Length: 402
Image 1 (cartoon, rainbow, N blue to C red):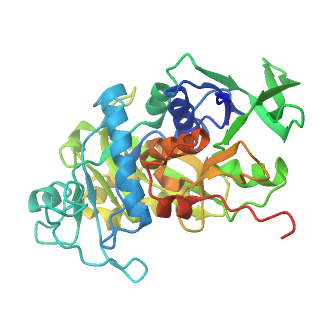
Image 2: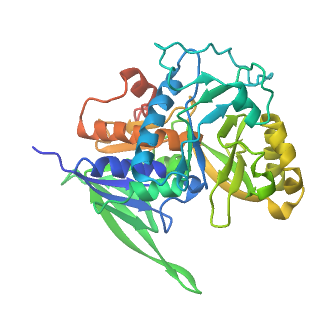
Image 3: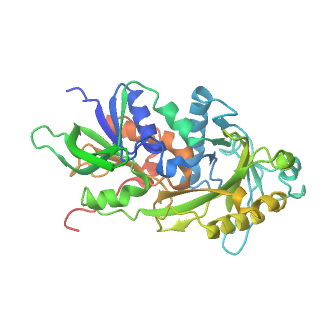
């Protein structure tokens, strides 16, 4: 019997858009549902983000995953986005400053046969100098394939297919499998805005044999309140990005590449109002607040002063004028082991129900690669990722009697 290629994806952020695109590229018909009016809100609505590897001397699972993920994301960006506007293959400087809470193993220059050879190098004096750092030998790393990407541009490109039907203001209130057809039937609360009067709603339903949960920070609540399943240890992390428009007088003193470490910094990012710089984000674990705060700005400023002291000094006058500092707030979803959760929730009890969540702060790096892995599992194809990686990311719902 041929595979019924209809799927509903819940959540229209980077993860959901990537899953929808991975499936339609294989001939599927996909309905993409989101409680928001438009795609790419919530955590995926961050103005810009860094795409980079997690470099580790022992090449741990997160390193393996991010290395492959970076290649998948950059390949898509080259083919579908406008460089210099939507994204930039600028490279990433990774600061590896050690302190009592963040010790780093020394990095040895990669040999030609190493898996890291084309991905990570010891930073050169010229790169350190451009970042306002000492040109002397350091343990900082250079990732030549690193980039920045605007998530909204990425999501729009992912959804540019007639076989993806986006349905906004759709809130999934309940879902269950039909005993007659085996399909998942979703009860939808459809929110209808009424100008000047708030909103009303109607109820409808959607059904498909396959459903992917890509609900981001709402995943724990969705599991608990819609499926009545445990949250698998997934938890929210609230964060605030601080940013400002870039005055021409400081442009020459800001690095042209992205910088990662205990926090991050990006500059020369085009916006409708001119080039801008971004720094952050804060990490408020187990928090879901979305209010901008002066305390979060202060935390971002302190982190920037540790990450790039000369850059922080260059932006002092702007930091001292609250009117010039802007904020973006969002809530990410993370797992205990910092790896995504993907694949079937429970193939025996919940056949046809899959997940892609807990991408944390690495959604831009991991979403496209992980979406392909989800599509492989749905189609029953041999996965491109190793069994060990898939096992580390598998969904682990306990049996009902546990």
